[in-house]
Length: 514
Image 1 (cartoon, rainbow, N blue to C red):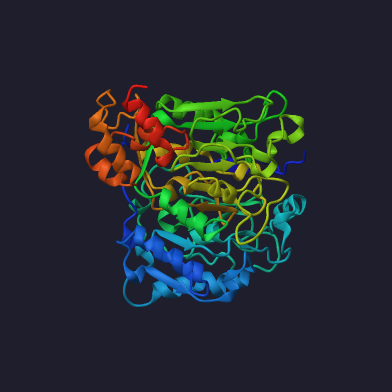
Image 2: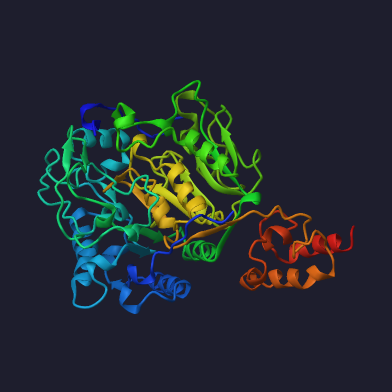
């Protein structure tokens, strides 16, 4: 690999102005659920999660108990003493689960999402200060979740405020980046072995001959939202998930790239082809991959921001520059400001992944910054999954939609695997929101004529009982007999991707041929 011989380029993200080919669950006994006993909401949401995944063994549930974990931010020593070490100690106890058994951590709301920098506490909230810390090789602000992916590495060992004096400084290349393999297919017997990484230009840690593999990392996801009800609703939407390719689109919305180079093609090192953090021109590659697979894609590179008024089709994946759409005068600012996603239609399974520095900030009662959109707002608006940044990540280190969507919607990987396969670096800023164990069954059902619940091309008496079944919420019973039919799309006459009492007049009109 020649990446370390190249030059470094960074851009701050601040906005100034058919069935999957392969399917495999993450086994329930390889998941550790972590929650805070000091929060009644966490206890309730933990119970909901275990009800959704009843195969998770009781010993795979860890109750931490600290009022200090009710905060949004943790000083790094608190992260070590209150989160990392208790999880380690639990897994080192005699009996299952053992360190090599666990491939995924599920963090239950409320749970801190940000680790503060050790010597410039809130530097990650200031793009210019963050950039200075980064080029000094001393940016160890990070997300709780990303730091936990390398649970067994003593990343802070040696940290004394110097340049790259610990592996917690700056960013570590993700060994799982761009992979389409199941995370539990990698050997994990050496997961507790410390790895020696290569410091490149005092800005990043590369793997080289370190031996660090995906078998040494964990998939980390969080069940979260602005409120307990939001988190519960998103969790429910992720269960028994069917995605109808005929009834949803992928949106890729950038500013006018004739006026300014695209953010989704930024590389960390030059030349880009040698950069282990670079995934290619993401929006173009995603457009090509998903279109070739038969998905409807709206790829917009115009000055105009794609607003709900301009796009009313159900959106299964929303990728945008968000608040950065107006960066450098290359595009229109989002109508609605940070709440630009309100008014879009999001079916169950919808994903949010925008190029905004702080789109994962507003959890645990924190607010947004610079009028940027939020994963939490997306969840409240009916979304199911999202990748967010809790501190300034810099554009070359944001996640790639191409690998995420190919793995989730084409290959049949879980949400957690799909998300982390799209993230270039670890010990960095991302959080993965939504049930990491969720998978999508993709079908293709145009759903016409509307009201034809059994797919015979007619709306007649044979459809009445099936419509009533869906109206009663018994979707699983419907799919037991009609697995390739989308009952919600066929029974939805109001365009809200729900079947409820408001759809009865439309169904009756279709039944009577009116």
